[in-house]
Image 1: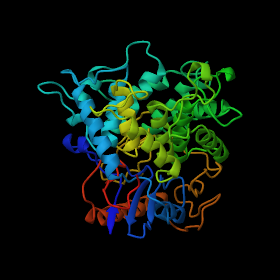
Image 2: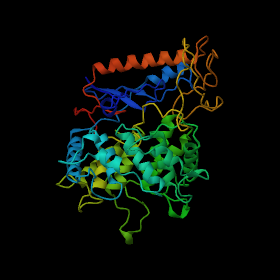
Image 3: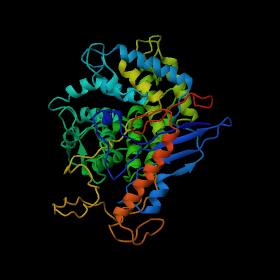
Image 4: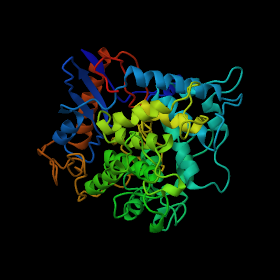
Length: 481
């Protein structure tokens, strides 16, 4: 019996820096522990976001371990593994002495995400006699006046590498992004892509669920869903839906849902339906299914197919026929040098190769959430530390941070109860079982102990360590293709 494990743990970068997460609040991205048998039966244990200040004990336990027989969405086959290895090999050859990956603007960020999805620490991607990929990213923050999408892409790369978006190369990327929040949205008032990528970046940076930049970006995105269920990069409805922006939005809605924000399930369902309606007979996806024949028609391409696969990965559809067929299309486009072009035949490039590697590695955007303590006093983060214990030498108590609205409705995709006040002795609004005489701090400590015990148990069967929410991938006969 093969075990595939994904848990939150200290990243290699944190260990190198001597920093171990000390948060009492464990926010876990959905990860899986699946077992395979010759009969292809699997049991998946999904760990979801847990915050004991917001939910009751029984609800927290139900979120900690939820069991359902499903197909493994986070496994790779030997054919995928070979394609990924060849793709990574090609990207390696495109690294300059300064650590930069050559290609279109921003490709170094996409490459960092791809390396992480493939199981390689971007900090170890070093040009011969030169700098690492992380060195390059640290030395090259967005220029003054850069658009929001530059910060958003960087934050996704930084958090994928397990590093600190609040202080990366001397720059607070999160504050810089939030500073572009105005008029109920992020960045340009005529663009939607800087809002759904804003959701991805702010969730990855682990800002508070009540932060207005995050909630406004989510609301603005949902307000611009088209009648066909899809999304566009623009607020102009005349631009029509497209595969790329719909796929990215699906990843954003998934990340917001997993983080505990209110996301309408029907919006996700409609967007997914649109996405799947665009697939071609060859298994791939076009950018725009309505492209006129005179302009080439709705031809499948690597970029759109990669993002579509990532969206399906995020939604847990890694073993679906649509995902398998799309991955088969991607592999058919790979060139002899390991690269992927926009469409074959054609010369490959690092941007399309990075996206294909992420997709074939069962990765997606915002697969990783920053897990170290947030900056002290930073209004973007939640202060979820327990109250200080009494000591002989009095010390000032930290200021209390705003608590989530206890009347907030349960979130889609998780059985959530409303927050429980310290010492209240009961839960409210949807908690499965009242807990009397127990304080929030006691619940926090108890749950922390349970999480630690679970981590120790799965560590026994762990075959190799990965970074945040990374899955151990094993090439077994029953793996998906």
